[in-house]
Length: 478
Image (cartoon, rainbow, N blue to C red; front, side, top):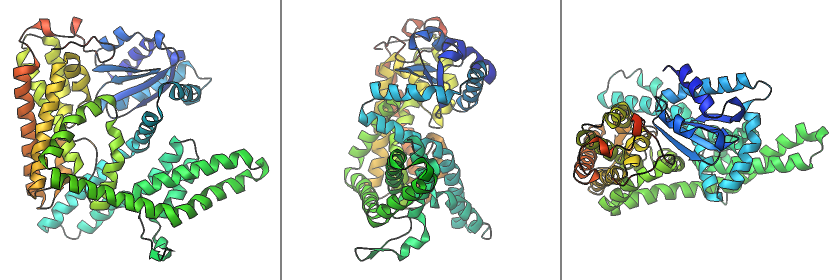
């Protein structure tokens, strides 16, 4: 099916245009909010060709389509739903539902994590693009190639990161119900060079102090002030008074308090990560690599994005991402073992073949929802593979060979251009590559021995050759 056909097939299974409230997507999942969950034909939805998994979360349905595909299907589905219901936009019809759903189904902590993800996920393409350019720039500089071009590439790679606080402020205000441009204006104070002339408690501020955490706090405060002003300021004065106070009051608080506090927190995150790996080494890597797949399954892994971004801003790279990437290696190894053991199960092998290229690039959700989680045991054995891969990278860090990533985004093989290390790119690539091999090997071996009971189609959880996703499927223990 092409993307238009997929969208057209999805719409009636979701209850039609009248049942679709909002359409969105992340890197692999189509996220659709519906008015009536009973109108969604779940069994047919998960059996649709091209659907790798389905997750139900209240009135929200997450349909795993894989990277690339989801970005093309989402606008087509939104266009079809809007065309059939032109009187009201999807966003307008979904606003009330979103608030009701969040109030009913989400705990404060889970809601905040989801909102954090919504703030940072749209920034990932720019982070990846600039990170790749930064890696190429560093390679050219180390090899003394094209010296005249290196400064230009450095400027291109660094421009976004130098202003990331503004984008975070914009996205924060938008997510929490404020005016996005005012959120960006408040956060821009943090990166303005003139703050170097401002002294707080006898200490000069530094441009960028507080980073993304400061921008997040500044924009949140600006949203609170803006909403308060909207309630009390007369309409005749609102256009002048509200924007001025929204920028002025949070701006002063940011300069005389928030930048200092957020700067200390950002530095503490960097020190904590370094201490954890320098002293915990293999143990810390084992825990991080082994626990990351469950976070991906729950969709909570995106809450780590602010930590990665802070480490990149503070230290130039995030040492956590290469460790966490080992979870994907364990998943690949487990999937290959299932492919070998279930030699007669055509449906499982077809799903693995289609999902494996994305998994090698660090997009593990198609394999999670299409193979390992439905089968049960391979999910646990994939976590074991990731744990051992993480332990290897963590041990190397403890021995003095640290590996970091200069940007965030897909991991797996796609992380190679983004690597950095304290002993140069070459050794960082070797350590990370060996870690992937450990994850592949342990994930394969443990899954082959313990993840499946034996070859044969009787083990397939996909009756009729379709690959469902939780919670619609009945999970099997192995």
